[in-house]
Image (tube, rainbow, N blue to C red):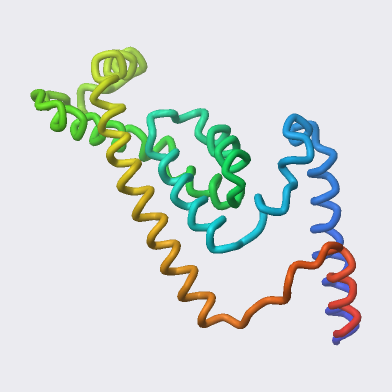
Length: 193
């Protein structure tokens, strides 16, 4: 039983992880970033890296930049040296289903801050020309409202991730320090089975 499990883990799980990492390094999509995308800080799960990534990713998610949010989160992670997967994951908080409602309420918040009459109705937006008219008419209120909501939700995300990280680090057993050659670790662990 142990031999079958060991063989399965070695052949099906760990070898795939190693091969996926090699393929990612050779991918034409990751070549544009060079070796910087594989920097240790971008993949490390430290308190600073994870909490900042959650805050920055949430901030980017709630800005009216839908369509380029993933690229913005990659650039922010590279510039700030924060956890790349967490940043990308958090920027996925808004999606095609939620984005109309998010933009609608952000525009209402922006209009309230500007002291203007909030006369927009979600039912008037039915097709693409209506969407374009909405963005042309409410650009400034939308950006003001989105900055406020992005800042508030980004801070909430940062603080809640900070609390959760500290709670989990106290309750879970500590991991071993970082080792340079991860590929050999998987094989050594299998030999111990």
